[in-house]
Length: 377
Image (cartoon, rainbow, N blue to C red):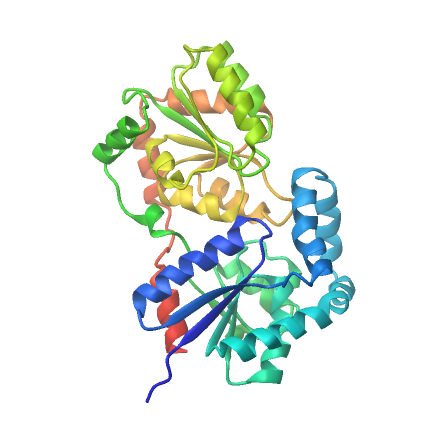
């Protein structure tokens, strides 16, 4: 009798990319094999306060408030002695927790979605049941921090040849690194037509005859968003503008005030939404940061991007991917962002030019291929 497969997906809440990737893979695995069981497990229990402080609270603090802290932390984290120091600080509570989880859940397979967990889950597997299959899915598509490859013996799943080459340079055997399709929610990869776009604009209250600029910024918002909006108002922009503020309630309230003060300005303000795919599809251009998940979701919908910021080094490859493939621009100054948006959206051959550029761009998003690989392993 074949043993029923049970997967544990390990994640941390340092940015949305790790957990969103795990969720999409959960759906994919259960679609490919409805009999398999998948359980998502947070990598630190409530007792592991140091781990949460360093990797979750520290990440949030450096991204939202102390922007200079992250570049410093990132650069230091590239060095193995610093990585080893972090490992020693949180090793005991993390391994103990994983041992408890493995004994309770009895998985056949584990996929780790965060570099801070991989070395500890490997140790726990060795202690509890070495037959458990363990893979590490690297969620940084192009520029991979060295800490992902701390353990040279693990099996890694990566999105690009660039990511694989970096692992090999650091001493990981080539056969231990497999290139896989990008993990994206099927909502973004489902084809849509011009008629679908018009229907979505009608559904969300947009003028069907206007171009649409979408601004997506995550928790801390788009850098320079206020200045961009002010210039749209000053220049009496002929396109519609939509801003997704995520969980930033203060920014949402501010923009709602702007909307009330300028009723003739075609402005749409959103907080956290679970239909971002629809807003992306109905838009013509997206201003955003270079987070890998959102960037690939937008590009999969064949929408050009203007990247206003990327996380120091870590997201550099994401930005370059969009720019090098001529489907995006990197512009930091709000005034120049507005000028670029106007240039794009006032181009009479906009649709023709965009189609030509995106036809030349190939993004493999067949997530179910990854599930089949895991199930066959």
